Image 1: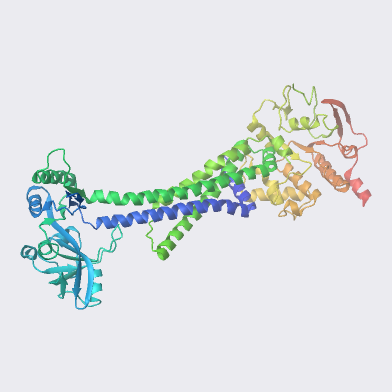
Image 2 (image 1 turned 90 degrees about the vertical axis):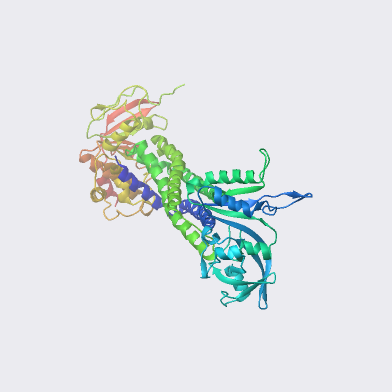
Length: 405
Length: 225
């Protein structure tokens, strides 16, 4: 009924105590700013991890060789060599929906050219690998299925390896000696940057797996396979079928453990983002605590204010203010402090995360939803912590309030 | 055990009267004033204000009646600190049912301030005004809603004698204009400016008589200068 003039009254009261209003709002500013910045950092980290996981390729199932124990010595994942080239062919042949399979072997090897040498990861793959991983070449051409069939001595190199060996020279067409075997470099990969685990993905040499098995890694077994499925909805069915097929081919009796591991890119993404989710939650929770502390600050100031302004409340009641008018006035004061603080806090939070991105090179991501939630939460803090002092003010007896010293 | 502060008081105040309510502390005059001011309700008995029984009304209805029919003047002025004289005077209108624009509020407040001799001081804060001027602001605030009755609780208690006479001068002028005034005081000479003196003791009326030799503030002031 007279909310408009009550707003006026509340704003005047806040203006009368400028310093106090600013300091009270500061608690909320810091709280909201911290929530925005912290959640921004967490979300930024999550988005980065997700982007990296997506770089594994679309609808990819990863199969790793299992660990086995030989003479009491257990090998790690992929070290056991339980997967054979025939397994890969069986998957190509028998699993519906499979678009591409890349057999994989890898080893860390010293590579050299001219008077430079460098220790890097040598990856043996099929020609489909670049499509599966959606990893185009920056320069030159990938090796071909024919290269794979013939185990030709060709390879492509990552940006880091290329720079280490050849500096600014174009490596395409050059000879790279790997374990003293000369390989022709057919192309240079586009840079991918760090993996979620912090490994430089561009420090790499990729060659036909046949060449790698014959000339670099040795042995006749695969470390793993990358299997691409055509349709995302067929992923879990394909995963189950691959497990069944490999168990059958490896003669694993029911009840015994698999000697291989099948993971979808989805599962890997979930594991990797779980950590950043926990981080986001933790950072948000810590920032949320400061927001609650800011709210308690508002309550404290409002309580002091009610006590200090007891006479004012008495006068207002004497000249005709209802209890509800007083309640509204104090509630508006509290909510104004918290929501103005919220808006400034959002601006500060955005500024803080921009500064963090610019100077600390942390990825930050501020979503509209986190802004909306922070603002609504700040306003709710004002209502929640303002209500008790406001109700206390409204319940005052005008006679006693007027007599209050 | 309940101790009644006011017992069996039967008092009729007519429109246009100027009554001084007197008595020692504890005589019940404050309680009576609170009831007259609709700040308190009588435990038993009735209070008829402007033809309507208000003794059974709830808090909010009493607040509305205070807003429309009663103007308060307090001993310690009770102005809002750090608030201009104009805004102090506007205060009752903020809670009134009538919707006035800011310009109308301002215009009315300035007019009433001018009528109590404070024209030109509308933007002063209480701390920039003397005690007498602060009490004039409080009187202006009491008058802004054209009340039926002005209730003054020891209005000269915090003022020096000359300023007290000036305030009494304002009250006498208001009374000439037909405004009913009830004033609590314990000073005999201040009570002399009223038309009727009511004395209380131990919660009952001790005496109630018209003032015979009424002091006139204007004459008193010209005598002093």
